[in-house]
Amino acid sequence: MTKIASSEIDTALEALSIESNGILDLIDALRDKTELTQSFLETANLISEINGRVVLTGIGKSGHIAKKIQSTLASTGTPSLFVHPSEASHGDLGMIQKDDIILAVSASGETQELFNIIIHAKRFSIPLISITTNPQSTLAKNSSIILSLPHSREACPLGLAPTTSTLMQLAIGDALAITLLKMRHFTASDFGIYHPGGRLGSRLKIVEDLMHTDKDIPLGHSRMPITDAIMEMTQKALGCIGIISENGRLIGLITDGDLRRAFNKDIRKLTTQEIMNPSPLTIKSDMLAAEALKLMNNDNHPITCLFVVDSRNHPIGVLHIHDLLRAGIA
Image (cartoon, rainbow, N blue to C red; front, side):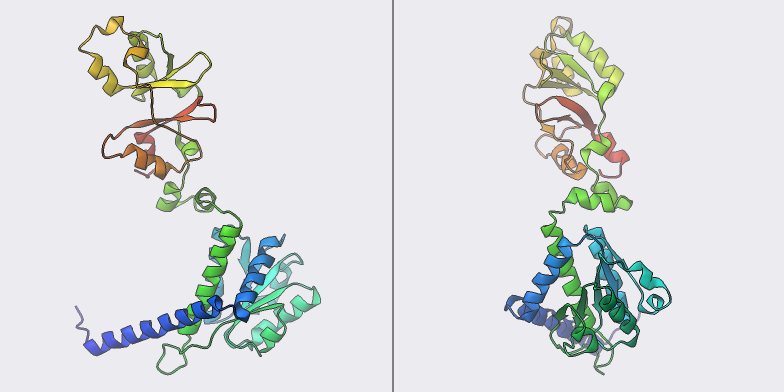
């Protein structure tokens, strides 16, 4: 293992401290009702009302930041794409439509490669928003809205490598994406639609995606003999049976555990009503599967299955712990 001198750690800590000061400067600028505050609100409102997409662009380090902002916007419900400034000059300007908004990221605002995008925005009256630290730049002067970031010290000791400035660009982009998320009332379920893969996608599945439905739901009535209930539970193989009233409402639940506790009686003479739980825990179909798992893992009384009911308390599905295991959630 390479030995790290304390001076190297001090350098790393100083860099983080300088960058954190840049974020604090950005917070102060946004909080203090400056021009940035008004520009940010105008940007959020404009994007929330458009029919098209947010087109991110930038080059170099700012281009990488623009790509990240675009990805965050897209995954949180704001349609967006990234257009490389150089490729834009060779045909990709056709990707930018009249209903779109252009969000250009450039610290200096004098990036030569952006000029053709500026001209395109002017020609077709496409709103151009700039994220820059130079409000007097060519980019800023040709922008509909300027998100002018505070001048903060770069963490680079040479003052050359973009460090604090790119972090602030990313932070204002994240702040914008989260603001739009709330304005659009974007939910965790919506988030799951855009993230179907991997463990995150699994945890964002909803109960409706995993529950057993229709003929696979084990059901019986309150006067059903226990022997018949056992047959229904055996056929459906979910370890439970829901007891419904004449109008189809769920009024009770019997599990394997309830049956075992009833074995000290003459089970042939019992009906479902005599051993059922009359107040079973139920869930809705739009609940996140991960939330259903928390209910099942109750420390005081863990359970293996949950009935899913509609607004009238009619059973529409059953969720079993094994369904969550197969989906990679449990």
